[in-house]
Image (cartoon, rainbow, N blue to C red; front, side, top):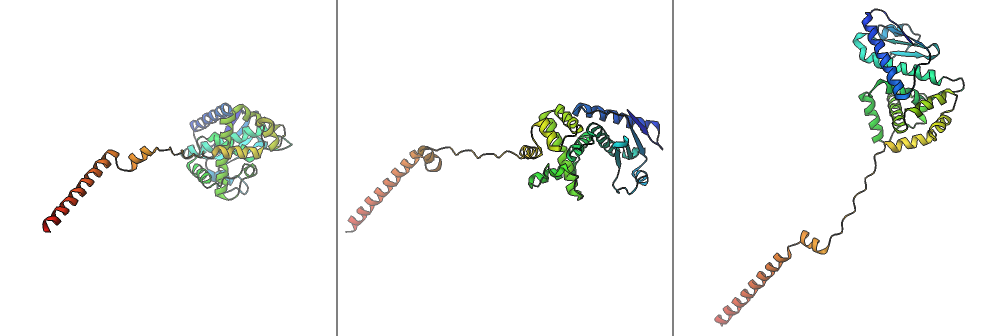
Length: 273
């Protein structure tokens, strides 16, 4: 199902890449039930510069591109960038699988679904994505699910946040409702359903409801302060005042001293007179 073309490196490098491709396809099937439906070709350039040199008006950050209509992925990296290249390859491979399942002349799928699945296939989210996401939750500035259904913002920070949100949104749906419903969602989009129509058919809620549920899921529960316990008069007296037994003793001593002083004063006055 996968043919790899490469140059400049030993066969062992290509074998390592094919092993990574097989592992990612197995994981994607286990996680979502999605599999390749048609054979694909992958063209591996030695580095990003070679890749960009083969393209018309590429972005300077382009490291890999998927062409679903041609069942083709092009990517550029060498052994020194294997970890990075593997993540990019898995990301683009997921796009290919998802597009084969959802391909329809009647409509498309929301961007958060496409990018969220691809980000999830890469593995644990990178630190800067997690940081942006946590900051957005703390500042109550998450982008709505309705907004990330469309192409992501051209502003870098908003774009990165959109990718992070898509990752966590997919994680929420799979964790809460299971992989079977996720695969049913992909198939429903393949039948030409609208964004809200597909969600309603599979999950029985639309995009607006999903946004509300997810926001509530992410919000930490508000802890209620415990009700203060009623204290008895005896407890208050003992806890915040003087011990009753000690107070009685002190009162007796004070009375005795005053009485002695009074008697002494009378005696002194009587002798003087």
